[in-house]
Length: 249
Image (cartoon, rainbow, N blue to C red; front, side):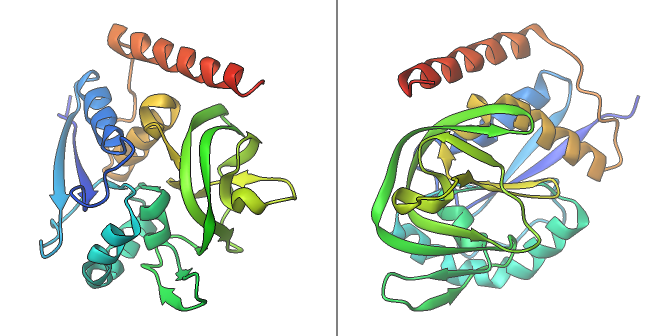
């Protein structure tokens, strides 16, 4: 059997790693290892050169100052990130990192800043922050997490939401009055406001990203079973249930 190995690109982990978002990368590495798949993490920080190839891309969130600190460097690598995503490399972008990877970002004063264009989304910064636990109904069941963002996100015509908010705020922020949606799904890539971090809390999506990455590499996508996987999946299910109960669902 051909040995399976993957390269995970972690964008700006020194600046964009609050709210436990680095746990998403750890979850991918460990869930791969438990199935006999080698996952190597390559960090990209400001001024670094990109690797020749990658199989998964992750970007976490951070305060506005951190986002501003990486924006110029991101502009230099944006075209390559778009190429990878269009080729089939799955991308996971969290909150502030998702805002940076969108088409554009509208500042509170109305100034429009170009994004990396990886996702067909536009974020508008607002003063009121959406903070608290959140539950979202998706095509793969309920997902849960913690949101802490000050942006209203609009999806473009080619994008669909991750799911419908059953408790919490989501893309529309605190002022949303219509049906609330959360996140974006474009092909095998996801943008979301959910921290917690997202993948350990909702491991179905971790395995989905691993399968997508293996398929991109032309490798066997079977993940198999492992008692460690079953154990952490049970713990994640208990955590989601606890959040649902706290939210009255």
